[in-house]
Length: 226
Ligand code: ADP
Ligand code: ADP
Image (tube, rainbow, N blue to C red):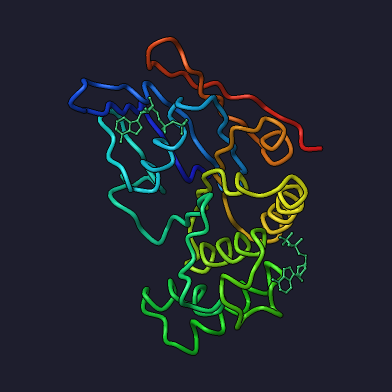
């Protein structure tokens, strides 16, 4: 079952200095329950790609289909986790995770019940009433993952989520994310510039290649999971 299909995708930015082609001829499919990583050097268009998938950026060529429907703007069918901790600092862990379900029309009790389950899944049951500033970097990213999953998205879009963590925490979080991924029905699309991280996590790695100039290519590499 194909969840995400990207067809001949292109993105050219216009700026006063001229045009920058960030993505060209990008084609790939992501299947349900796959863990796909995207790697590539700085400036090759990784963030542009994931922002387009998230609906936070428009594309200038091609198509992005989620469950066969063109992506237009952000939606609860895509959960996002960024490198920076984008938690609401004035809300507790529980309130941060409840926020999405409540916005999507769940009653307060139902949203709370679901939030507690997601918080349990990421191992933070003891911290439901803590505030973000009381948590370590790894713990904050766990909350961010719980919050993204709480909307029950079709796909989890992660943009260098562990990039700001120290090496040891990063390692723990990689293992933790794989555990979560194995236990629930979720498809993951994960950007990193770290090949080791991609090899550890991914079923499939898309390699974005920076040519001289701004032209990009994409190569699919099958990787056996360790
Ligand atoms: P990566 O995430 O792989 O580092 P980006 O997607 O951030 O790559 O950038 C790809 C290219 O697009 C770069 O040449 C960058 O300078 C350019 N770019 C990114 N965002 C913008 C923007 N808002 N306006 C103009 N050019 C941009
Ligand atoms: P992580 O790998 O999730 O970032 P840490 O290595 O920072 O976790 O912390 C390991 C454990 O120590 C956590 O699971 C938590 O139980 C506890 N801990 C970390 N930071 C705090 C804190 N600010 N307050 C209370 N307990 C903490």
